[in-house]
Length: 325
Image (cartoon, rainbow, N blue to C red; front, side):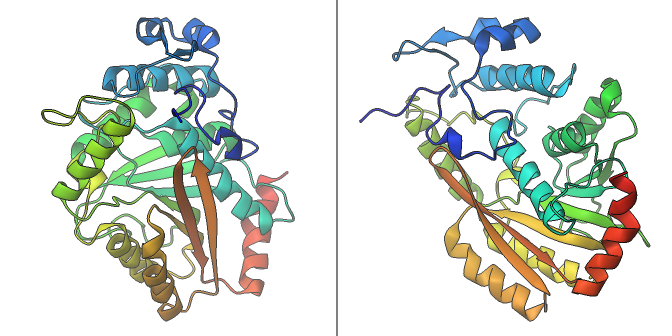
């Protein structure tokens, strides 16, 4: 049975109810917002308008159109070779984090700049801060170990008035640290977000890219072209996603009152037991694992907090009650 057309991903109705990308891509409207997209739109074998998702230039043009049309971002660009993430799945993570905060706030999503979120590994694309600020008015700190990624994210923020003063991009000076060197003394966050590099080596990342391109029908010969891009630090890290998240757990334990909800995406279900063991050892007060899906891609969000029920109530009164007024 052939896969569904690229502009109608399987299971797109499984996206979060507030996700703006649940329906089919409206290419005429997207082209109206971003005329440059027109050069990449073709009629696919199913008779639908679509783009070639194996073409990095087409993926970037689609992202530029989506960000302009739905989020009011007039300038968005990334250097060649950097990660160009699919917008719908990234938006889902933001909305799931909003639900976590809402569950501790009487069902109302805390909104406005009083809500602070740390994006670990903001990348050159700055996608999570863009969506989080434009959807909920949150203030973001984005960290990255790559100076080029930080400069690119800073350019995006500086070029868009809608993002002015809302996103602070910081360079992580130590490649083996996550929160250390980023979280400043006395600084607190309502949530952290992290999409860790899930491959354990460059060879594993390359093999994953080949499988992805094969699924998209791209030629198998030659060096694989990363349709969504990605620098080494974005795609792989020693020990893969489990080692990365376990390190995040260890560092978070040293800052139990610096964040309400620490969160991370986990792509491989087999890494969950090790992460859950680390959280038990860290004495997290509450751990939640939330299934997420976009088409055939399955992932899960792991969230943990060290705050007691009384501390959570005090946090809500001090930070979110003003934000909700």
